Image 1 (cartoon, rainbow, N blue to C red):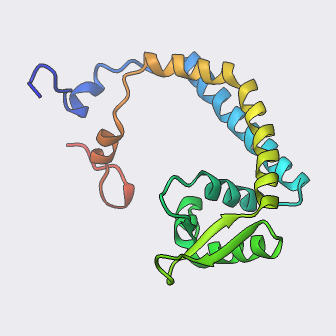
Image 2 (cartoon, one colour; image 1 turned 90 degrees about the vertical axis):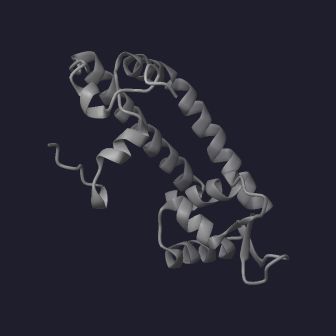
Image 3 (tube, helix red, strand yellow; image 1 turned 180 degrees about the vertical axis):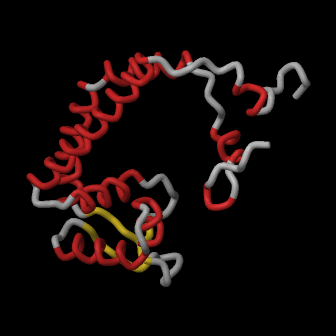
Length: 174
């Protein structure tokens, strides 16, 4: 990368950033509200089928898993941002309800592979269809937010990471 194509350091770019405007805050606020409404809608859809929101999230994570092998309990914990023992309890409850099958992986007997049952897949599809319809209705909110984002000079995720010190705290500026 040449000097002319490299981005200036984050501190040098700060001065060129414009102040956030009322429409920027309105777009961000509308997006946050849309997220909260969507989550409430999704949680209500899960409860209507007798599932907790976390059980629904587990079914979705397992079905959406892109790995070559079936998802493991550890991968589920990582996906849901919970501890391994919490994921194990969640899996136990889904197995008891007949929504999930847990079996030793054929290639590695120490690994527990998770697979949806037909009942689990049907419950997930019902909730997911409703959720996708709800998301489709929020397209204008996403469009407004994207337009606001295009107007901003924001740091890249790498720049944000580099500007942070230990434990995710911002480094003091000199």
